[in-house]
Length: 170
Image 1 (cartoon, rainbow, N blue to C red):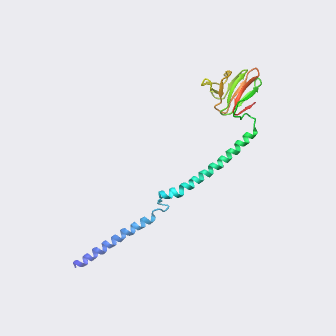
Image 2: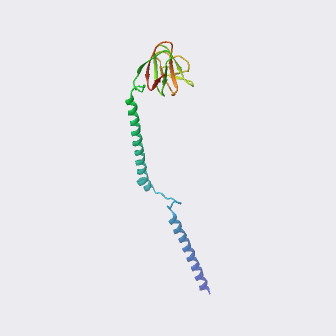
Image 3: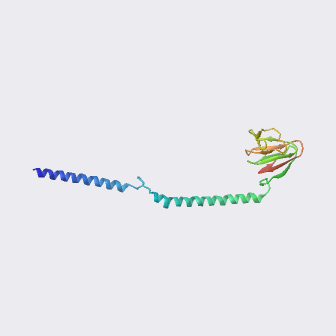
């Protein structure tokens, strides 16, 4: 009787071991699936990163071509005050010069006042100060427009200014 009992224990242990091994195999088979992703460093280095680099370079080249085309179109138009060097501009009394973002202006002859919807209207690069809307420009001081809606208005006589950057007259 004792031998029959040992046989049952051995069969039970064998079944339990088989069940544990079967569960382990089943769990290992699920690793790396969509529900349990497993990514190796070599896959990232050999597959993902080169593809990502290729996509970024293609996007950069496309954007560079677009920007080059836009730049060439603007450069071909000439006028309108988009030069990298200073341009002498003459303003009639009361005439307004609208300054693009980053445009620089220096009053050489006459008088002019700064204007903008919000202060400061212009930055006085010469002194490091600000010029508020309605205040007059000082001759031979360099001013910069830090927003697109900033402008200068000529005083009661003919005004000559040096301008670098974008502008329009109205």
